[in-house]
Length: 163
Figure 1: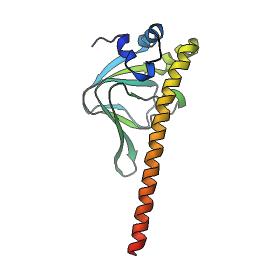
Figure 2: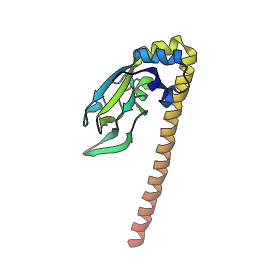
Figure 3: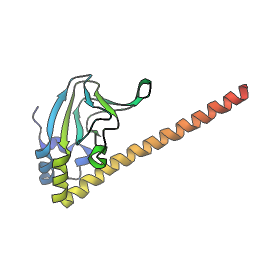
């Protein structure tokens, strides 16, 4: 599949970029096709790339001590993953597995870092979009945490009534 900058334009983290900026990102990008069931990122392994789903779906899971992995979410086209490792230099925090045949665009950290240092305007636009995605994910996690806490409190009250 040939990729062009028109594809980048459909991805929300790149929507603020102009053609010249998109071309710079495009030159860094590599695409890879993952068959269904392929482990794309492994929790605990060193990262170093931003991944963008072009086509297909992935499942994000977290290892649970002595239990089956916990599904966190699934992501589809135009979604990003692996972005945290761009900033914190820590190993991947979750497993990402292709649910169906999935084509990803990968932008290596080293090349992206160089580009962001050279082009501050592009840097500001792109980092603002990535921060927006991370903020939305954190808000969703906060909502889930509140719901889970309320559910736990309700269960504990029910158990006290029974005893």
